[in-house]
Structures are given as structure tokens and as C-alpha cells.
Length: 170
Image 1: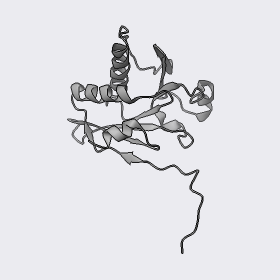
Image 2: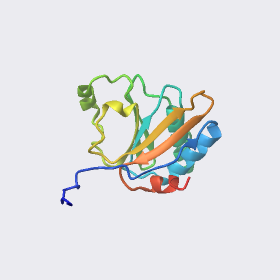
Image 3: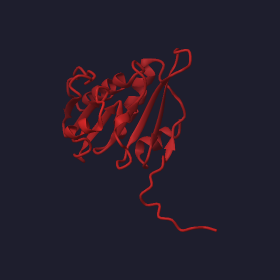
Image 4: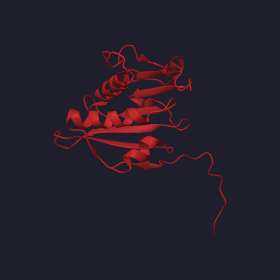
């Protein structure tokens, strides 16, 4: 018998791309170029993956591509592993790039004011420690093949957005 249940507070992955080959930097750059055209203020990108798999390279390509499109000199984009947060202002777009690798306890997140500003783009490396249940997010999972000769990217989300729509086609 069907039971009418309230599903309004439940979030499900809307869709997932297939494995996208990012083994060569030019492939990763093509992906970031597409994503740069589709990002909106308020987007939260959660980047998962092992050390060295391409998360920071993705962020560098993305920020430099946005800077180029706005005719702004490209800047050096480094992982904020030690300072935890790097901010980039690209015309009217504010990007907050977090690296939570060194955060070991959830209480340490309170000082970061994650997700407090709704008109910024948050990019978060090593987001495993945060609870993503109450936010809309786009999840990027970077991985190696078993023999480490290939790198892959899978994109998923818990809400409908242009990025997911674009990469469902791949």
C-alpha cells in the first residue's frame, strides 16, 4: 500500500555524468572552460579526490579562464592548503577557494563562515568534513585509473543546474 510521505526535505542526486577523461591537461582545460561559461553566483563546487589528481589544477584553469574572459590579467592560483582560503575578485564575481585538508574537527569550520554569502562562488577542496545536506552543491570527483595512467572526472549534483545539463550529454 502506498504511503504518502513528506519528501520535501530529502535531497537526491539529480544526475551524474559518465567518466570524463581528464588524463591530459588539455582535456581538463576544455572541461573547465565549459564550466566557466555555466557557473552562477551561489554555486558550490565540492572537489573530491586523492592528492595530485588534478583538483587544484582544475581551480587554476577555472579562475584563469574567468579572468581571461573578463580581460583581467591572469593570476597565480595556488592551493590554499596553509591559509585555508584564497579569494579572487573577477569583476562582479567573488570566488572563495577553500582547501579543508588540514581541518580535522567540524568546530574549526565555524570560523570560516562557509556558505554564509549567497552571491559568491565557493570552490572547496577536501570537503569531506562538511555536511552538505543543507546546501545545493555540484560535486566533482577526480580519480585515477587502477594503473594511474588515466585520470577521470565524474560530475554530479543534488539540484538541477546548467553544469549538470551540459555534462549529462557526455
